[in-house]
Image (tube, rainbow, N blue to C red; front, side):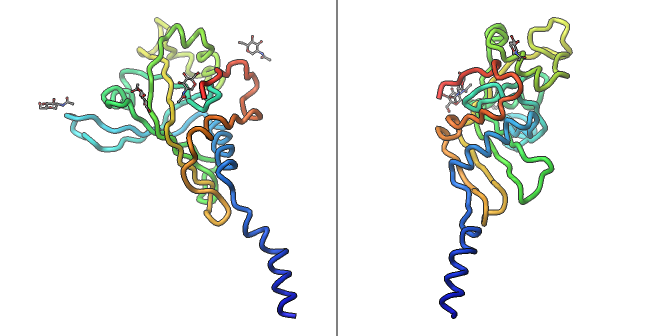
Length: 205
Ligand SMILES: *[C@@H]1O[C@H](CO)[C@@H](O)[C@H](O)[C@H]1NC(C)=O
Ligand SMILES: *[C@@H]1O[C@H](CO)[C@@H](O)[C@H](O)[C@H]1NC(C)=O
Ligand SMILES: *[C@@H]1O[C@H](CO)[C@@H](O)[C@H](O)[C@H]1NC(C)=O
Ligand SMILES: *[C@@H]1O[C@H](CO)[C@@H](O)[C@H](O)[C@H]1NC(C)=O
């Protein structure tokens, strides 16, 4: 009888216990999460010879999901604290974190650690970045990089993650840990590309 109930436990209950996310699941969940949002919190480091040298700085930042490899589009402005920290960083480093709505300890969030490359304005516009970005942030039409009447000087930029840390939720059920970059970049969430995926720039993977 005891053996029987143990067998019952093993067969019926254990599938619930072992339903842990794989790293492949985590890559897809992370890509979907990033594609489902357009605002995250960016973190940068204050540069040398400033009063807050070496301190981390985190503040909300718009991004747009316009690259199939998971890189993100940004509008950077010289007046922005993040932009100044990035350009003074030798590797132009930045991190971006994105979380589920509503946020909860049991729900997914991801931290992307990477760096920022300022793009040539005309090439960025020609590649569809502006259309893609405006689709996700219509209010940004007042501060576009190529607008002489824009509110501030601005540049298109690309955030390339080099490390991905995913927390799917509680660790008994969800993946918590690093997602390899090549897996993250090659896991394209086709069902989350938005209404018009002709804007998506094919990434070099
Ligand atoms: C910081 O200031 C020191 C002293 O003036 C100078 O030698 C150094 O080059 C400065 N570092 C940077 C990154 O500007
Ligand atoms: C970003 O980091 C990569 C290596 O991960 C490096 O090759 C590249 O030059 C960096 N970009 C900038 C703008 O510093
Ligand atoms: C998608 O965007 C392209 C480029 O702007 C445009 O030509 C096309 O009509 C759009 N398609 C839809 C279905 O909105
Ligand atoms: C992602 O794709 C873009 C567009 O092709 C490319 O410029 C960028 O270098 C790629 N980033 C990485 C980290 O491979």
